[in-house]
Image (cartoon, rainbow, N blue to C red; front, side, top):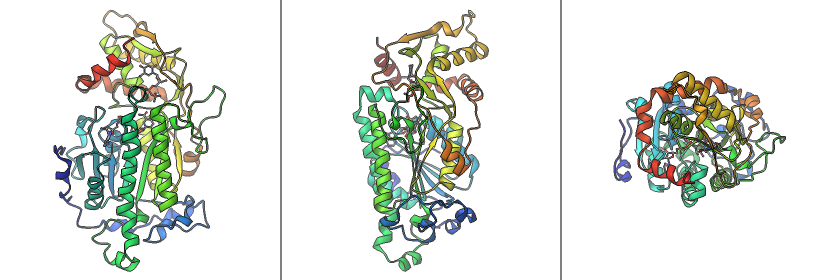
Length: 435
Ligand code: NAD
Ligand code: TYD
């Protein structure tokens, strides 16, 4: 059931069915722990109920088993796919979604899982510190997976303020709340009194994780012959969106280095798949084909993106959560670089096959070059060697299989499409493509 109170504060006093008992598995460490250590001299954060001291803070390996997750932005594209993924795979886990339901947030994305007994939806803003603190405490959240963001580059060009507010201030509010609930209570009390109270408090910080979902766009733009972005590539964000994500990444890192907040970051490439709002390239092209509208390609159409099916992204985050090194950043990619022209041509071919135009005119006839995006990054590409070698990640979908599934999903869910292409959406399309 979706809870959508007009006043988010009404959620504060609602205790979940699990909230009075600490899940006994919280104290269970995975036996693989020692096998993964890359920093043998650093004390493991899992070995104590106290948070690591700032002086200990180089990245440290860990194996975590989340039990009560706060998923911010869970009504958006990737967040909702992650909620589906997690509920299907880990049926016992508590899944609490915090989402402000901006234009990009859609309760319909969560309908298939909304009746799951461990599911709770909270309509609220990540910038609401009291709300977040209360949720972390009430639900004994041990894992925050932070998707909530303003996520569209073109909108950031037209109106950057919302990007600073949500992506930087919002992320910082979450960090402050996590520090308050996971760390500050540890330093306020002695370890023994903490252990004595462990049945009523949130889980110890050593079993908690703040996972921040970020983007490859923080690294800037690659030339055609440049090596792909690795975790050590210098940040060089070019759009207000990318800059706001870079700022949020730095804040997350600083809360680890300064306070010992257990965190990980993943920087991923362009996602595609079900429930993506049709302002982004792939769903926009599919829906424009269906509507017989032009297929707008910015500039010369030769910009390159590294496409990642959202299911592969979810599996990558799962691996980082459970086996990732605390304090580490992981790049997640699809190993799938395509020019925008290759993408539009592939979509046209699939649409010709799966939903032919009634006059049998190829959809490629709708391709239209439009003026370029300001500051348009030429190429993104992810070097995913770290997550592959350390955590065993490999994308399961090729672009061919993933795109086919995606087109099929949009064709089978035209009610969903019609419902999101209203009001604000139409205004946005007019504004962005007015020339
Ligand atoms: P999206 O725009 O589809 O969804 C964002 C969600 O966040 C929406 O449900 C929205 O309602 C919610 N939200 C926005 N502001 C909020 C606030 N102040 N409080 C609470 N909720 C709020 O985004 P997405 O494409 O699913 O991206 C998710 C995350 O992944 C973002 O952090 C984005 O930067 C990152 N990312 C996305 C891609 C991609 O290709 N989509 C690629 C790399 C990284
Ligand atoms: P987009 O899906 O907005 O993702 P991002 O900007 O985060 O990479 O755009 C993907 C690519 O497609 C990017 O190079 C811009 C281009 N593009 C178009 O050519 N036409 C469009 O209408 C849109 C939305 C994007």
